[in-house]
Image (cartoon, rainbow, N blue to C red; front, side, top):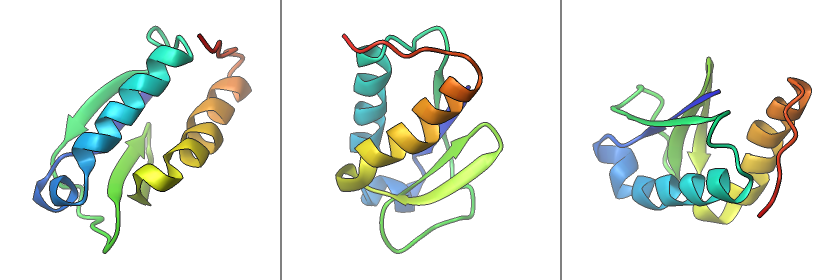
Length: 91
C-alpha cells in the first residue's frame, strides 16, 4: 500500500507535517513497515478548506485532520489491509 500525504503549500499550512507524524506513528505501532510505504506529494489539485489531502494507492481523500486521523486510519488503511489478508499488530 502506498500512502501519499500532500505537502504542498496549502496542505502544509493546514498541518500536513502533523499528519505525516501521525501516519509514521500509526504504521510503527501496528507494525506495518513492510506493508505500507509513506511518501510526500506536491499538490494533487484536490485542495479543501480544511485538512490535508491523502492518496492511498489510487484513492484520494481530502480534509484529513489530526482530530479525525484515527478514524481515517482505521477505516481506510487497516480495513483495506485486512481485506488483503494482512493482520495488523499493535505494539
